[in-house]
Image 1 (cartoon, helix red, strand yellow):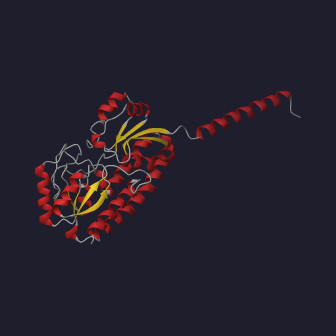
Image 2 (tube, one colour):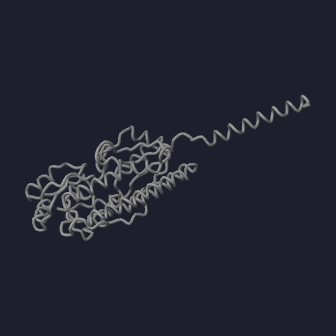
Image 3 (spheres, helix red, strand yellow):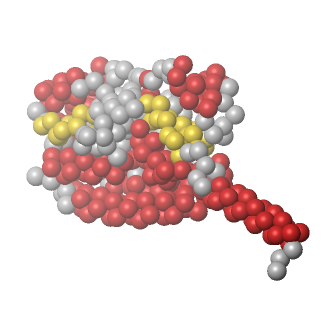
Length: 312
């Protein structure tokens, strides 16, 4: 028979253990999603792939938006002020981001997705003849156009998220590993697609110089009337030089980009007789229901568009 004192003591310890159990349950419950800001749509997609449900993502420059000439809004400053992590491309791609970080007063760490990338020079021809441009910095910022570099972005994003949210580190590692495997498959498909194009036809005219890393990685020559930034105007001399080059090298097709004014490329096509090869996605994704709603969909769309025009 339990004494009254023993009953009270048992009840006390039972209540205490119940409190401990509920505390443990609370500790295991997912916290509020980590507020994260990414600067533009392609980067936002990569951050979402790694962060999954543990993050609440705000992407500043949306689908079909041009991050070169973007003007941040008060809402963007508010998003940065509330963020626990800001992810940028770096390499001076977002010329406005430092001012926005300062204006927002954010205390969030700023992670550079392109950290450690082996860069190429912005206005160098890289041996591929796309030197018609205007450098606005030492490095070409469009590093994601090489799928190998996208894998480095994923590793940098994984590490930044794990540092900002240590409790989610294992989740971020697992998500990054699964997505990197998809990028491995994508890279193999890109190489196979380019191999199907006769070497003499691997020459492309695009609106602005966004495909230098793609050119270097996969052996396709790109020429662009604009430089690496869309906020530079192509001079009449640049355009005339490109028209001469198309005629001399018999460049088979010219391509529009989703972030640039199509009129310049259309004029070049008219004056040279090169066919319009379709639209490539360079600096931004399409809306979700479009042909390039994710990074992987964008690369696949670009490859299909290039091979359809050049493999004939």
